[in-house]
Image (cartoon, rainbow, N blue to C red):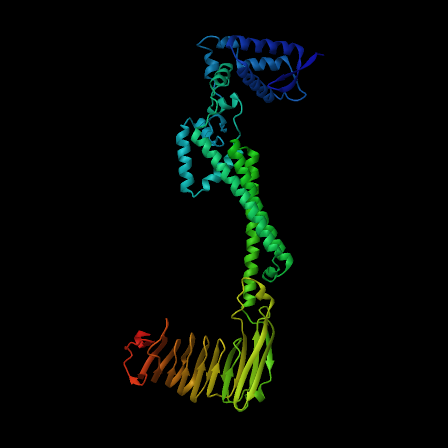
Length: 526
């Protein structure tokens, strides 16, 4: 049975036998005396002893024995061997296994480059230059490798660690020398102020990110008009919550980076926290944006497709008509000539349109088409333009000789007709197509209107208009009446694939002729 007592080495507590304590105390006193070691060197030597004891399994409640002390003396060497300049060749030449570690004593950021330089015996300047080149060549991917090394590679905290980086023998003399020669980490003034300035930028960025995130989240949360775009309140809340989380995580990341820059410490916990914050933030924001884009795409599809169809009984209205007058701007007419069919229907988008009404009135041989509707819930969303929203009216009936329109678009499909008169008002569109010949087409255009008969077979065209666009296929005769003065800033545009006889304001002219208020394009000029 041996008596034990309590001591500490490098602030680590140990149990030790009394005889072993005496031997260890004498050994430490001899080291201090023979090597003239100061307190810093003695701390490093005690740290090395603590490491060696740990390798022998002595820690915690274990007891240091005389055998352990003798093992320390054998591994560290006799202090008298280092009293002279020559020293013990066996102790001096004994190398230790190299170990890659981060060198904070020569670090600019985390000590990775300086640790690699110490491990391979390279100049740290060249290692840093190569690192910057790799970052540039790989488009920043080398930064990820640096961060991984920053987490995985341990930091050289003691003199023993610094000796181990280069594979130097860990002896008493070596511990004393490295303790005395390890430089205090100094930082150039320019780099210091640059670090502080960059840290300030990240703090400002974090504050702005947090403020903008909260403001945008508040605005979106309080805008009920966006309800229809997201489809439902839970989906809106989910997307908004994820994007808000991403914005907050970015602010947190800025704060972590600023802390690293101001304190000049890049610890493993900070790096891991930064990676987690980055992954959570990017994942949350990306998922939120994906949900929003998917909902917007779905909403756009819903607002551009008619999803409601209603039938109309038009047999009485279409019987015996010869004229059509579309008076409502909110109705697009699709009229198909048929010898037997007398049908009618209309379609609309229920998101953009509410309570549509289509009124057909027969006055003599004229069919009057009127309609009205209210903006649907989708029109309350700021991303939807309901100014051009219309009801599409489909009619099949007998051929008509006269079409007057105030609608945005009228499509008239016919077979064989002797004559057709089309009168357009401003900002209207008419498309005429035929499977047979239309002998005579009389067209009156207005400002900013368009007329398209490129899919119709027309023999003769009489065109009277001002500003507007008209397009034809092959025409035997084209008679144009156009203003000769006061054209304002735009002219009437007329194009045709081929024209046999061309007259402008009663005069026969060539297609290549130019006019003040007419832009004429025929054949190769079209």
